[in-house]
Length: 103
Image (cartoon, rainbow, N blue to C red; front, top):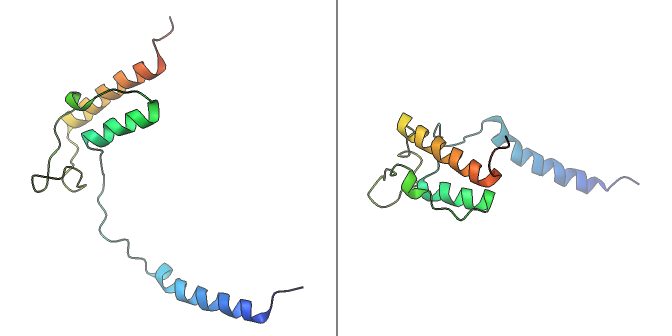
């Protein structure tokens, strides 16, 4: 037995209300790349690999927008030095997480 006509009418009203947003979406301001700051990177390592390891001293300092918060995407730039240090820490962490290489 098909659903009552009122259900279809209600669904049509909801669809008409949602449709204008889909035709012209406004995602807001989007930053190209957002890197993790030192604390977020440390927490990701702890959560993903269950390693209680403090990697903050191994990473370069984070820039701050106003001297207080260090997790603004607009000020967390990625330089070559940042990338090299983050990759170096990633190599150390993966060695600890996977164990010594087989020979």
